Length: 345
Image (tube, rainbow, N blue to C red; front, side, top):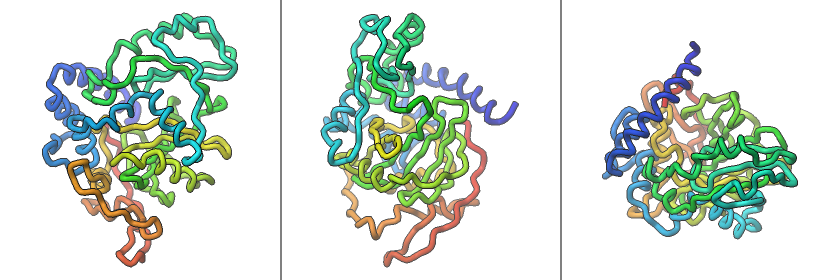
């Protein structure tokens, strides 16, 4: 059995077991258990340093009202709609929202659509313009409102999200869109995660600097050959920084169709803080970009002087992120290292 297929089988069997066990534990113990299962070590929750540790600290400790609505998809869209002109984005239209799909059973919409739970992540069901909400849709989504992600994983902001289903217009045009996930720290993009072929058997994930220099990092999903920068990269960076400017950290997910930039969602807890970056030095570097609420805010550096890069040196890795500059702005991009095989989790 190929390694990638074996990894998929192991993940599918172990993750449900890990989550069931974790659901029986108190919140702090649950986070430690899940972190150990995903990262192979215990987190430093009292002194978080890496990005993953800080995500776990946020899950356990940050109860800011500004964070409370960020796992509610309808609230996210309201936030994006208020900033759409400044950010230069479009927001997919919500065609229906409610707590019982029976209300729209047998109904078609005037365009392709996608069905999602308002209070959970990673679940979608697509429909064409002439597709109805039918019995198979009801059966496939029956558990979507019952399963509470906040109870299972302890991710607090999900507990504040309304338990609803929503149907919105499908902007993909029938083809999988590249999913641009921009990591915004204190109003500045530090790195870009690009998922290609998501929800297909050809899912690949790559990382880039804001200048579109490839970063040799893997996380859960195998990487592919780096692609050319999108023509609207500058617009993406601007949109993400506008949408994420009020948070110490936020992942802003965007889509691009032709010359149009679309809002996807906000993600305050990427990977639940338990999926592993390979190599780990990138996790440490991302953690350095994030000052938690109890810590002093970093000094803002003009974009022309920033490269948002680091030479995170480790065994067999010369530089995790290429393009570090010296204090006077000079310096050549460091070579991208070759990484070992992707971890299981």
